[in-house]
Image 1: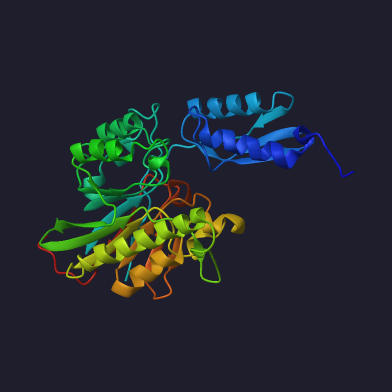
Image 2: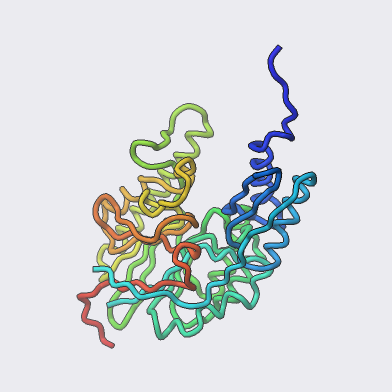
Length: 89
Length: 244
């Protein structure tokens, strides 16, 4: 007999497919974002460099998981200030 | 002393034109050289390489870079490299270069590096051809790094520039499960065997800035997300008497 499930309902597979899409989709190329599923909603966290990339990530996720709500909690971070100087003995 | 500015993982894309150059304004007053620790582009296209090269052209200090995994994604890494070199940027892959700083020589040996993991939890070239190819690549780049380091042994200060991490300590914050994809102990072993003043790497965005090789060489994870600045400045060769 064995057990057969609808793989689309399994969060682990969905998150894997989203991360694959974010890495390989020409609009994104993002490998470092966090994707979590809680309460049936997909939470996106992490930092991207531009507003355009923030929108593109959400767009790709919505295409992969059209039946889920998406909470886009990405931050757009642009570092412009030099950091401290450290002497290495 | 020689002031080395370093940052990694800039991830330039088609939307980066005009946004990268401002971060390096005034760098000539703060540093003698700029090192970029890979993942210069988002998807490794020649176009992204051209955009970055235009942003980095004539920023005021000699610039030396290695490529990262993102820069290989579109299989256009040679064209990315060409655009950067056309802009006067030195690109190292198992190679070395020198930057002259007021009569002293800063030697830089660089490679992208690769994964495989760390002692006690590392992959071996055993089994399938794909597994042998994975570790074989790491072994090859580690050997090329060692050879490149030997060419700068006589420098007044020596830097190893990588994308992948040579140690675990600067990965702290990343998930343990992905450590084998973030770096390899073979890189640290190559560096410890020849010596250097400091090692810079990127790649691990959630990692930690500071660590050291088993041999006691400073390691700094300069991924932009880790240092939280446009770049950091590290001072090496404190005992040097420069002609400033």
